[in-house]
Each structure stands twice: as structure tokens, then as C-alpha cells.
Image 1 (cartoon, helix red, strand yellow):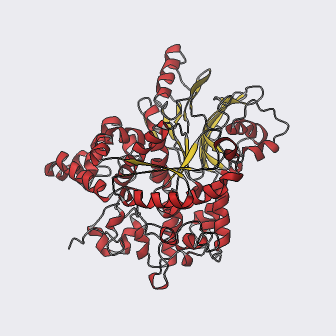
Image 2: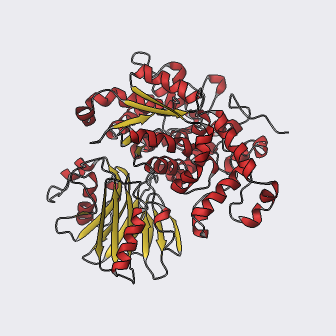
Image 3: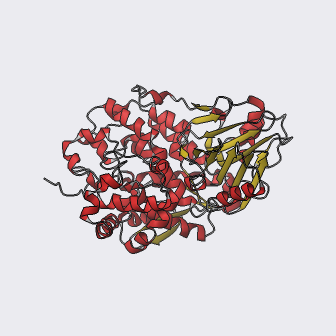
Length: 558
């Protein structure tokens, strides 16, 4: 991951303004500690903080076309850059960077090229020939991007809110799958997959098609010139990522530099479910496994730093980001700069335990669509920012565009949970990798019940957070919360505590509006809370709030 900052239309073009841009860009240096770059062109600035993953020697940014009339600053990875270079043989490339193709694609096709990119990305591009500029974000919002507006009429773009919140009067999250064009003066959606309409698909389930699509998604993400590994919680999703990566590593470019033994990483409280399951998977796959521990107090001590980096006050995101933040620091200390992770599967396949109560396939499918569309506000934000806080890049094969299209085209009757016929959550994915001849995973791991990351690291983690918040927030503070925080009013002391920390770092109203709200149970949308009347009394994002489903569910509050 890298950090980008771009400003267009500044009234002040003095040396002091340049210094201010450099200062603001340095707030993103944790994302890209390897090098810093800045291009200024009259009243325009494009800054970059680089984390070097592909072509570390010559891929510094901003990047240019041949005559440097087009400048681009990019955060992300373009997995099909070699194929795109083949289509651009008339162009001369200056670096081996996968992101340089963006400048040449724009030169060749104008603004209508973003759909050609296969990867995760946020970029801003300046065309000095007509002083126009564009900005775009990947299909799902794996990489973060914000847009803001200054009082002087300037338009700002940044990877994280902290780089523009002080200098912009208004700002918001840049919508995933969209492009902003200064020529047209606004955003338009470039990502238009078949599932976006939420119409119920009817394609029959083919386990081999699904398996091959996922294997392809994992293999393309082994593109790296630096040490890497897999985040392995021992749950289905991360275990499948590790299994496929381990199986195909010997055929990848990474094998030539880093050998055939995959590194895997896990964190938890001592004795937690994830640590036990991850160790078993690692032993089965023969990975070089790294097990990290943290205490509840260490997690609590990190909360302010975590909230500063992930830029949200959403309860479940903070719960899960804290152990991931601590683990990322340990991983980076080992010299690793890139990891594969399992985010996105639960949204695509209805893996959260509340999906057990989906009343029919239509509502099941519509909920998965809603969950995918909101990923940039939750799991993508967590996975990206909690790792990038330490200069670590997380890649998410489940959110591959081609894989999503395959998975979301399956008739959702196959995804529905049917206990009577042995179909637990994500059965279609489990079954696709249930190979008796060449097993990917042990059966009991392949069919392990869903654990949300914040639960799997140890149930006492969430209990400890609640206890701590209860000591920090009084009954009267919570009773008056709707006056202090009229937008997204915190309903629990834990939520109030996180909100208070967030507002210390990001006090503007625009900042608080970047965080979603509404009731949720076990990570559901507000709409899905309607599926079970008992859930309204247990509104908590933990999987254990799925009463009657989770094996260690909270007790029902009558």
C-alpha cells in the first residue's frame, strides 16, 4: 500500500503551500515508508508516499508518460499490468512498476480505461495538456480514498482522511467503482457488474467453476518482489487462501525469489479458538507459522492509536482492527511487506451467522449485495488501514472482480443455510474445496463454524472492551448521548467510548458522517435485523449475538 495526496486549483501557490502539502502528505508516511515524491504544476500538487512491492528499485512515484505531460499518483496493485503492456507496445515505459500502465492507458484511451484494470487501486491523474484531472477507486473499495473541497475552490484527494480533514471545509469517502472527472465536474460509476441490480440470478451451482475462479484469484496476487505471507486465523476463508497459495506457490514468480515454504501469521489471546485452529492448518499445509499473542490490556492501550489510523468509530471494525493492528506490527518487524487475507467471503456467500435466519433466497441475495456494496466502510477499511498503519500491504483474493462475478451469478438457493440437509453457512464454498483425492484442508476445518475475527482471537477480548468502556462512560453520559452526538448516536457505553476518541482526532461534522450507522446484529445490515424479532433485544455486532445459531451465543435477554 501507498499513500496519495493530490490538490487541484489552489489559490495560494507559494513555497509555504508546497511545504504544507509536504506536511500533510507526511501524515500518510506510515502507508509508504520507502520513499516520498511530489509533483507540482502551477496550482496543482500530486504527492506520494511509497511502499515498494513491485519494482522497488525504479518504481518511485508520481509516474509519467513519455513526455511527462501526464502525471499519476497511485495506491494499489495492477495484477494484469503485463498483459496491458502488451496492448501498449507503441508506448515507452520508464519503470517496471505495475502502476505505470495507468498513465499510458489514459494517453491511449482517454478517461474510459478504468474497467481494463484488474487490481486494487486508487489513483489521481493530471493531464497538463488541458489542465484536466481524474480520480478513480477500485470496484469494491479495497483501497481507501477521500475527496474534499477547500474554501478557495480547491479539490482534494487523499488515501486517508487525516491528510485533508484540516484543510477542507467538506469531505467524504470517494465512492468505490467510481471515477471523478474535472471535465464533467462530478463522479460516475465505471463498475457495472450484473449483480449490482440485485436481481436474483439463476446460474446452476458448479463447484469446479467456483474453485478454479478462486484459485486464479489467489495465484494472480502472488505478484511480488518482496517477502510475503498469509494471515491465517484458522477459519474457512483464511485457511483456503493459505491452502491455495501453498499449493500454487511453486509455479509462481514469487517462488524464484522467496522459496516454496509459505509463511503464515496468526494472533490471539492465549488459548483462543483462532490460535488452535490456525496452528492445525499450518501444520497440515507445512507452512512456516508465526503465532503472536496479545493481552486484553495491550489491546485497550492501543485503542486510541487504532482509531486514529482506521478513522472510524464503528464498534465491530474497532474490535477487529485492534488485534490486526498489533499483528501487523509484528509481521512488519519480520521484514514482510505483503500478506494475503480472507476478507469478502462472508459478504459474497452469506457467511455471517445471521444469514441462518434469511427467510428466502431473494432476501438472502439482496442482503449479500448490500453487504458487498458496503465493504469499503467496514472490512476493506479495517484490512487496509490496520495493516497500512505499519507499512504492510493486504491483498484480498475473495474480492477479485472475476471471482465475485462467478460467485454472485450462482442461484442463491444453493447459498441458503439448510441444516436438515447438512448445509451450514458458506456450504457452496466449502463443498467446492471438499476434494477427497487431493484434500485442501482437514474436513473439520473445512466445515468449522464461522467465527468473526474479533470473536476468534478470544471471547474475553470483546468482554474486556465492554468492561473497560463501562468504567470510562457513566450512565448519565450515555443517557445524554443523543444531545452530544445527534448523528449516529451511540447506543452502548462501548460505542460512546470509541466515538469520544474519534472526535478527538476528527472533530468536524464531515468526518463523523463518513461512518455508517444503524442497528446491527452479528454484522448484519439494518434491514436484516427484521429477520428475527429476538435480535432487536441483542443488537451487538459480535457473531455471538446471533441467538440460537452461534455455539457460544450470548444469553437471551427476556
